[in-house]
Every structure is written in C-alpha cells, then in structure tokens.
Length: 338
Image 1 (cartoon, rainbow, N blue to C red):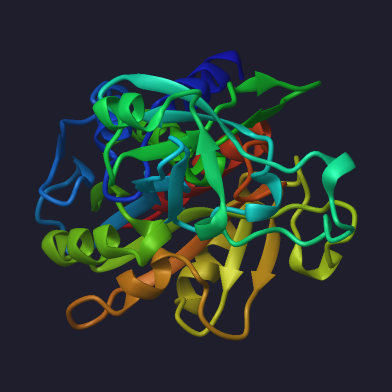
Image 2 (cartoon, helix red, strand yellow):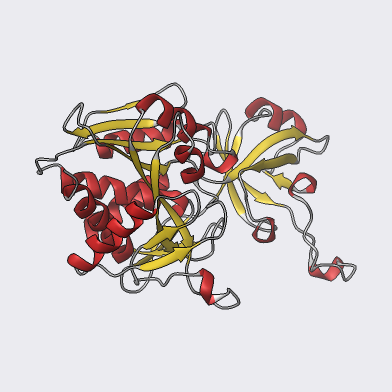
C-alpha cells in the first residue's frame, strides 16, 4: 500500500484543470511508461497500449486526468482577481480557502470572505463563483504583470495520510482512477493477454468529456471499462446512493452500460474474493461512460467506481484498499477475456 499511496500523491500533486492538463499528463506518462509505451495526443489525453495488437476484442480502460478548479476572468481596479468555474467546483468551501494561482509565477492567494462580525445575517448564503474574488496581496498593476485572464487556480492543499489506509487530497476525482489503472497496468504487464488493451487518461471530463469522446473515437475499441469515483457513505448522504470506504469498487448497472460486462465483473469479483457493491442508476451515469458508449457505431461499456467522500472539495478522501481492489478486479476481468 505504501507504493500505491506514493503513486496517488505524485499524481495529485500535479496540476491539471480541464483544458490545461499538461503537467498532470506528463506525470501520468512517466508512471504509465514503466509498463507500456505512453504518449500525449492533441487533446491532452494520455494513451498507452498493451496486450495483443489487432485482437478481435479491444478493451479501452479510461480514467479522466483533469480536476476541478477556477479560471481567471479579470483583475479589478483594486487588484482582486475575479474568477469563473473550471469544472464543478463546490462554492460552499471556497470562502477563506487558500489557493494556488498558476500565472507567470506560481502564486498563493486567498478566496475573499466577509468577517462574521460584519455580516448582515445572510452568511448562510454563498455567493456565486463569478461574484467571488481572490486576494493575492497585489495591486492591479502588480497583478497584471504576473496574472492574465485564462490562468488557472487550484485549491492549495497537500495530499495527506489519514489513519489506516485512507488518504485525503484535492484531485482524487479522478487521480484515484488514474492510479488504479496504472496499478492495473502493472498487474497486466507480466501476462500473456488474449485481447488488445488501450489505456486512456482522458482530458476535459469535468467540462463535458471531450477527451474521452475524441480518444475513444481514435482508439476504436470494441469494449470499454471506465473508472471514476462515486459517493462514499458519510453523514447526511442517502446510503442507497453510496458505497463504503474500504468496501471495494462499485460495479455500475445503468441504461448506457453493458449488462453482460457488468455480470462478468461480478463473476470476476466473486471468483477472486474481491469485495464489491452494485451501483444501480436509472439514467445516464454522469461519467465518460455515456460518451464512450456512443462512440462510432457503439462500444460495450462498463463503469467501475471508487467510493470517495467530500467530492469536488480540497479534502476528498479515499481508501487505498479500494484502489487496489479496483485494479485487481479489472485485471482479473481482462485476463479472463479470450
């Protein structure tokens, strides 16, 4: 687990907001290149191939490489930096949060907040992101020399170990999935596979899934397994919508997903003693599965999710045993494909 934790921390330390994933992609290429030849395409996707080239069955393994953040929209006359969303950032956790600004220099800022002593009693209402501002301690003239519209901002938080096998970090959605697939590649690297496997760390999932759409189109697989995160049990969250930290991966069942593949995942889990939970959805999955399944003439797709707490905040939490079990589950499923 220590090596898996170090892998997760290295992946989470690399910035990669939607459309600006280059640093995260380079880190992922370095990790994945230990087991397969990897490259970065025009969309910022990381792509690597394993297994038997030209096999009848070609399985795509996808996890998105981007993370939620902010984008600079302008600098006001007082030097405060105005921002917009870059993905589905949770505005409730923003006021008073430290952030990192990736301008001409890497700067630290604070999301402005009103002191409670001066509140008018409406402090329970959180401003829209577009009305918030970031204070970098600069005048307008100083700020304009270092920061320009389009620069990206991320929550400033370092990956940390919690008790046992749990860790917290920003960007675990979906660097946890990326780490699980790197580990899966390690497990598969010594195997004589009967199918072709392509690993895709896709860009821009948090703003529409364009990386998965173009990546899957270019790869042209017959099957796909998408790894993302889903909700883990915590106070005030409906338990029927949740997995359990340390309870294993969540195997998706939904209209866009292939039931035969789901049954194969369940069989692989039972055969190898891997804990799992069914994740039943009545409509779309809200993941890259939806885009990949509709690529070209259609792709048989299955979703495997890693339970995660506090999604889209700087303190996302996962259990490393779930990442390991996700990697094992997918590896065993692929090894069973003729």
